[in-house]
Amino acid sequence: MNKNILKKLSYGMYIITSKNADLLVGCVANSVMQINSDTVAISLNNDNYTTKVILEEKKFVINILPTNTEIELIKTFGFKKSNEVNKFLNVSYKLVDDVPIINNTCGYIICTFNNLVKTTTHTIILGKIINMQVSSELEPMTYKYYQENLKGTTNKNAPTYQEEKKTSNKNVFVCKICGYRYETDLDELPDDFKCPMCGVGKEYFEKE
Ligand code: FE
Image: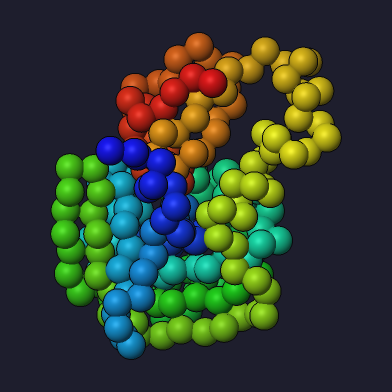
């Protein structure tokens, strides 16, 4: 078996949002799929607070990120926890159908909960589309584009890359599933670390 074939699968970049009473929640996802004209599927880590809220509230939004998305937005929704920080604090958003829509994206799809499949790590949620809008003609960001162009401070193609390697003694951990690179001062990832992109645990990360 050659696991590299899995890296040939295509993914996008999305922020999945929901709302529980006054608490706005959201997380980054790379797996969204249209099933038919009014059904979509998303895959979220079982441990994400956003997953819990969606299963309770039975409603969620797929915000489709464009290629010009700020890395800070992805970091905020990918790394922080919705029950610990207000991820929307510095984010431009509006409420539509009582769920948060992030502004300046390609557009959004609002769904109600339809069904789910649980694996040991992820919950695949089927949603029935109740509202959707094209917000701009911006180019949607693929996961490949994100990896190649928006790697925060770790873009290998960026002229600053070598310099950063020299001036900082940061460790880089790479997700064996999706290729996500995480820079940290720590020698080891915390036990509860989850890949912000594909949601797998620290056991799937290799030190570079
Ligand atoms: Fe990953």
